[in-house]
Length: 196
Image (cartoon, rainbow, N blue to C red; front, side, top):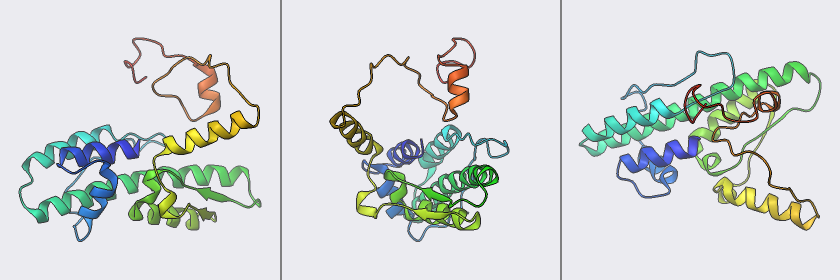
């Protein structure tokens, strides 16, 4: 998750939790091109993304960063790498969706803590506009951890009399694609380890 990447990299840089806002503040005035960071899965034609290589590379770079300028530059590079990956994959998803829903009102909605990051928000809004989507995001004050959003959605469902038997199999990495989730509903040991 992008939020986890922000938090883990911020921790490696000695920044307080939650890491996203602290990293964004540090990135102000930084040069995002000062550090070259990996951007995993960008060449693939699907909408999957991963921040694992980025987290490792940034943590290693953070060990050698000694000046305030270098810290600002690394924070800016991390922020740009995360925003870029989210924007590219969102761009790809919007293109696919628009192709199937031509002529309909298209809306791209972002939420959660990462939606509070101004760089991420600007890159996603630009991708939405480029693809003919309207862009919707809550005011920054309401862009908090998705756990609060999930809890509220659960509370509203419960109040409406909707409950769940809680019989879903636990899976550490659940596909966003409903067909893929239905085709392989549980983790199969040995494929690629616990994250498969």
